[in-house]
Length: 592
Image (cartoon, rainbow, N blue to C red; front, side, top):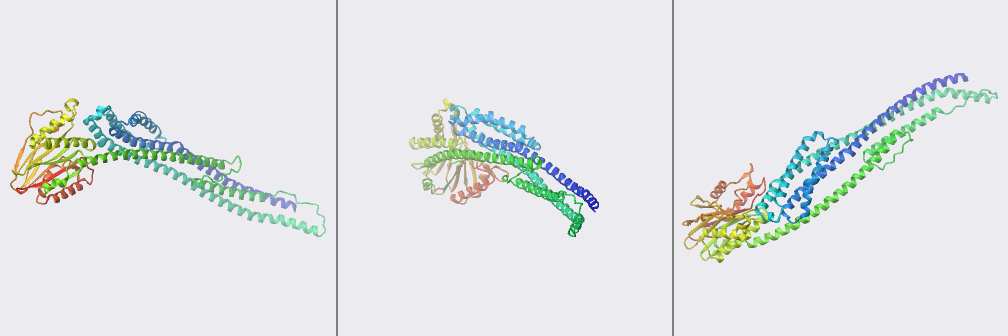
């Protein structure tokens, strides 16, 4: 009987070994698969930590350098005495930009952006061109005399407005698109890592289910195989109950099957815990408790190391973001404060300039059917209109000074004072003599014979004689256009300006027009006709102005002003205003 029981045990042990070998094979395969997945994701994590994020930081620093170059070069032109910003600009050009350029070019391949080589080359070429423009600006405005030289200052402003600002915007746009693509690539890598964790989770669940099935079958098998030994034990017990003395004994053995079942259950539970931990770490839960099964648990140790590394890097990135956000916020406050001070100063200058202009109601009390369309490009203007009444003569002029903005506004105040002195104090009322005297006094006021200052003005000036029903016109570059009996006439201004280092041999011309019927007159600066816009982004042109005057000549001047203003607003829609706009229109007849 005992011999049969041993045979049953041998048969059962062999099958149990086979079953246990299958379980171990599945477990080993799962461990190898999990280890490979963890190692691959660790490599991805190290690639993100050591290559991609530092590369993104360098791109962010480069973006800040682009913004700073625009701000510092603008301050170079408009804030003459700000030596700190000037030194910052030189350092940016000579040190900061070459360094960050070298670092980006050295790391973009490691960051997996080799396909963006041409884009990086384009961005750096454009940045090199921008810094070349700013270097030219630095060489142009160095000394106090350079800032006093209107031509150099205007050249500096031209570099800022037409080159630095548009090029900076283009570089920033290219860089933003490059950063977005890089972030998208980074997101794809992270998605790949999360997908691997998901696949590991699914595989672990699958292996757990497989082991559960094997354990279930083993339990069924053991139930069948244990029945025979239990019967044998029962028979021995029955014999003992009948008083028989039993000498043979059942050899005592450990409950191997029970231990194996317990071990498999524990292994299954640990696999589930490992999969859950990996999933939560992939979702960003770095506080989850991970405890390796033993010092030889490679999978548990790898997950624990990955969790610690990701947690440390996440905390480091959060601190960097906080510091960078604080720096940007502080820089923004400084820029906003400076901009606020500059804008307040310019607004004060605007009030001074507007207070110096003639009162429109005063003009319209003498020229009832008239309008003045005055649209400065900036807060203050280099264009201005001037009016005076001396006896029976009315003098009205449209003047365009060199430059616009603050420099032009200074010139406009000089021009107003000189005109008032010539007409109201010296009593000069002939249009050509007014321009000639104005030319001399501008040269004297700006000491142009000594400094070679070439600033000046373009002028269209009319003198209306109410007694004789005549209008005198003299122009420095700028014309007079008038309409009589639906016909348009144009009188060109002389091809010379007011002021500058030139001493003209020829005098300014005087044109006299007899007012015999209702006539409309128009004088203006070049801002309206030179404005870019329309569908093809071209200049408005003088020919279109003439046609506009003819089409609306039968309307009142107030209605004309509204139409001309709306026309320019519509023309401007796809672009921005490039110069000051000044247009004066008035109607004369024998009665007024």
